[in-house]
Image (cartoon, rainbow, N blue to C red; front, side):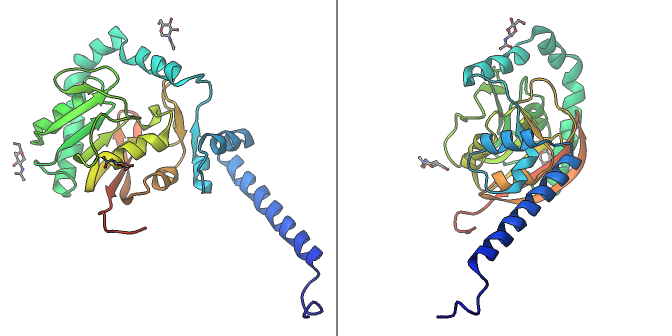
Length: 258
Ligand SMILES: *[C@@H]1O[C@H](CO)[C@@H](O)[C@H](O)[C@H]1NC(C)=O
Ligand SMILES: *[C@@H]1O[C@H](CO)[C@@H](O)[C@H](O)[C@H]1NC(C)=O
Ligand SMILES: *[C@@H]1O[C@H](CO)[C@@H](O)[C@H](O)[C@H]1NC(C)=O
């Protein structure tokens, strides 16, 4: 027996407890510095049941949706607002297409998008980004939203995309903040992207998104965690209609592991 040489088990236990507590205290100290509260940590942990990383603290699901239907109704309220739709189709139309086209041309130059890329815009509303794709030469492009806007935008819920596995070479979205289930939102992108396909997200970090947002994102860490089947290509600051960060992922080839 070697019991004489090892520390008494009780002491080990106290040490471990002390270490865990210190870690937790430090953790909450830093969380609070970033204007997070214990409640936000707990909600996030509850909302993302499979959370395996502290990075999930930076993604907070907004409380208050009693059912998926209530969430959809609230999203529809904005999307169907006649005044907003008119603005999107008139004053916003050319301005947004211009800005989207500039983003897309850069992606073309960086070989992240080509004219032959089969492309999807998620949560495209009236479809300015789809029109922009077509104008820069990416002709096989379509959008989805809860409310269709033919011919550019088909009816589709990003939590359950109406497409087969491995359909697209390129997906773009600037509505991540509207996702009630970010895991599903990303899972659907990774499902419908072909291997090697590219996903470009424009997101708002730390700035308060609009009142129709269903989540708040404080860093890109949760995205990197959610895109399990992809590799991060790059992150950069952009100026995209209130969204300040561009995050690009590339889906791994089927043979690639981990
Ligand atoms: C949607 O808008 C209508 C009228 O503007 C309002 O009565 C209704 O409560 C709203 N529904 C939701 C889910 O916000
Ligand atoms: C892509 O399409 C645009 C518009 O038709 C064209 O100007 C551009 O040269 C094309 N790019 C390539 C690499 O063929
Ligand atoms: C589509 O992909 C999902 C997950 O990526 C998988 O669970 C499902 O079996 C696939 N369906 C088909 C028809 O291959």
